[in-house]
Amino acid sequence: MPLPSEMTAIEISSPGEPDVLRPAKRPMPTIGDEDVLIEVHAAGVNRPDVLQRRGSYDPPPGVTDIPGLEVAGRIVAVGAAVRDFEVGDEVCALVAGGGYAEYCAAPAGQCLTVPPGFSMVEAAALPETFFTVWTNVFERGHLQRGETLLVHGGSSGIGTTAIQMARAFGARVFVTAGSAEKCKACEALGAERAINYRDEDFVKVVAELTGGRGVDVVLDMVGGDYIARSIQAMAVDGRHVSIAFLQGAKVTLNMFPVMTKRLTLTGSTLRARPVAAKAAIAAQLREKVWPLLSQRELRPVIYKTFPLEQAAESHALMESSQHIGKIVLTVRGEAG
Ligand SMILES: NC(=O)c1ccc[n+]([C@@H]2O[C@H](COP(=O)([O-])OP(=O)(O)OC[C@H]3O[C@@H](n4cnc5c(N)ncnc54)[C@H](OP(=O)(O)O)[C@@H]3O)[C@@H](O)[C@H]2O)c1
Image (cartoon, rainbow, N blue to C red):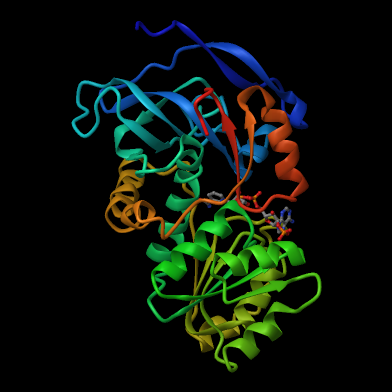
């Protein structure tokens, strides 16, 4: 069947509250030689989409203004230089934008095959958190088997992936989360101990759990005073990885423990990195993590799905922070 010349996509009509997300007609995306065109069946919703909607996280230069950082669907066209995929393949893809739409262009290097037995909804929930956790916890944080990881925001999309991946690679995992229900869910996913930060001081609990030694790696999305407190909770030679600053990026730090404990403070963003860097992460995931998904040792945690047209409702839910795991938009009926 010939492809249509236009499609339905969700636009950010102007920066603001969730109701600025509106369905609109847009031209079909065009693809370059190394890209594929995906007929989108489901698209993941991520916290950075909320920041973009509010006007504080613009797409990188040259990237569509349509929000959405991950999709799953069927390839309907391939660029002249694409060798690894063909029309008809079912893939999920990390994209720099454009996911909230009926069709989405993606660099072939950022596509991964839908794991066997996965629904399109489950597949769409994989790329953003799996790429982010892999590159931050394992590549920057160098988490090793037998080490300990502390994840702040354990019940987030990122957190639920980090718990499972770290456990699958033989680490002990502690998390912080904001309710008893969230803590229970994190422990069910494999966290050895979830700390309800409203009732307990994670610095004290981590000291007890590690016999005063501290954790080897911290994955932090909170920032603010968590950074100094996490440094207190870290072991000698520990690595602190920042991926967001939900409570603020500007902090005053006593740097002495960084010196005396020989700590590494690092972090990264994913969206603006070049295709080659993202393709390198995809290659690692394909080799080391996709087999675990195929064996169902890892799975995305789907909290709720919304039809594409209800993107505004999906953002309102995300901003309520009630969810545990991922929120996904369904774009075609067969998404399950
Ligand atoms: N650097 C990167 O490459 C990269 C890539 C993707 C995502 N991120 C970032 O990673 C974070 C998680 O993303 P996600 O999509 O997994 O988000 P999400 O599912 O919406 O989870 C965010 C969670 O953070 C917790 N939280 C702690 N302090 C908060 C605060 N001040 N405001 C709001 N929530 C707070 C909330 O749970 P509690 O009830 O436990 O507080 C909330 O559920 C986001 O900040 C996102 O921007 C970074």
